[in-house]
Length: 406
Image 1 (cartoon, one colour):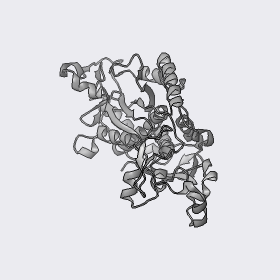
Image 2: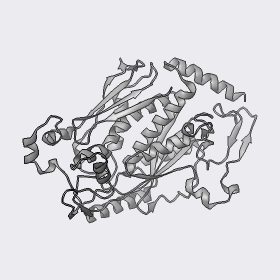
Image 3: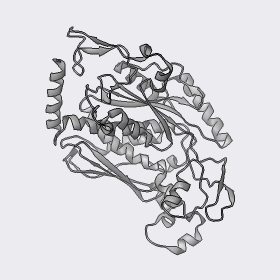
């Protein structure tokens, strides 16, 4: 068995909580390791006022003792500082008087593009706040926290995960032409450049244009979406499987990215562009070398010169970097409200506005890293399972020796 996780909590509730089960004992982890990614998620030009209120901090409640995991479920808590302003509205205890006094307690106007209307009908409620509080992307703070633990686990095996923005609105990085990088060094350099950008874009010229476009959207009361890439380097051949649909790693990764709020499409490697080209243009030819310097410990003597498949073939890693790409729709909560219908009166209204971001693509990339890390860590433990880090290391190193002689 690999790892599994659950999150709980509402956007304006007291806290977010998460449980990560299956992490082996002996992994060094601290709240600081987690907080680094929480800060990255809160950054990015175009974020809303909520980020000025919250300073997310992970509190580890269980599963870790004296800085190391002990094999039991890891529980993490992130307090919502904004809870102080929402106690009467979101209090779990029944308090009818506060609800009567506060008009924000009950929302009956569904916002286009949100879970509001479908959720209200599904869960039989005429108070949309019961839906929007949980469907909010605030929940992704906990995904990032749990993903940070998964990333720390993978880093012990020299597996690195990062992301960067390649498009916001119609502004695209100049070098992006569906040429998927095959070099781990190149990907890490791109990542370093992106981390210095306000919009987490490695192209300085494109970054400046993206900032200006976001400024325009702010003035117009509008929002923007875009595309980000997630990469994973250092993976050996053979994670995932071709034998059943739900064991295919590409399918699991696609589901993980699609589960992020506002994500509407996922590509792996060259993705949709493959459908526009001849087969001879997109397949990654296989080469073999017996030279000691050319042999890879994680793929033997086999290697590729291209990576159009994005590191996955037949539902399994092939030794090349895994490249994932996801498109995020514009944030549907707009100051420039769209038309809607009150679920009680059935009369037309302008959709209710909840404080929101103008552009969250840079943050979505960080969430994408977390989800990829959780899936990859799960697949890694399926392949090299063990109850302690020492045992996983023995299994992993044995497999690498096998590969090197294949």
